[in-house]
Amino acid sequence: MKQKIFMYLFIFALLLVLFQYVNSKNVLENQTQTIETLEDKISSYKDSIIALNDANYDLSLFDLEQNDDALSYFEDQGYDTSTLIPLIKNELYSLNEVKGDEHPLIPYAGTGGNKMLINSIRMLNHKWIIANFSDAQIWGEMIFSYEVVDGELKFKLMDSLLYPMQ
Image (cartoon, rainbow, N blue to C red; front, side):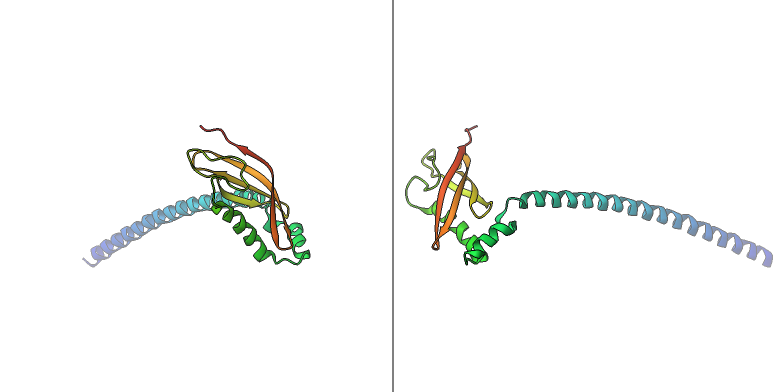
């Protein structure tokens, strides 16, 4: 009788060890698969980060705030670039509020009684700005030069284009 109890206990212990082995193997395989999936995601995210850094670098090539030579041009004239750059941008956007049907810088009249307004600008360097404009129906782009003379901003349109209505 004692021998049968030990045999049953041995078989039960063997089944318990076998169950633990199979269960641990399944958990390990599942964890390994999860790790591989996450490593693939990390790899794709790293590739995305590299692509975004490249795109960011390309965008910063023509940006006043990334151009040390253009910034030093203003600093050599005694201007604080951290206040001058927002001042120039604000001055351009404030031209949208000038009374009348025509914008002072945009050479095109709006359609349907709407006024052409500057939507966004990019300061390329210490001499040029590129901007896009629209009246909610048609839009275009323009490039103009600017200079700061005795604290006063002067803008001069160099060229512009208007995209056809679609």
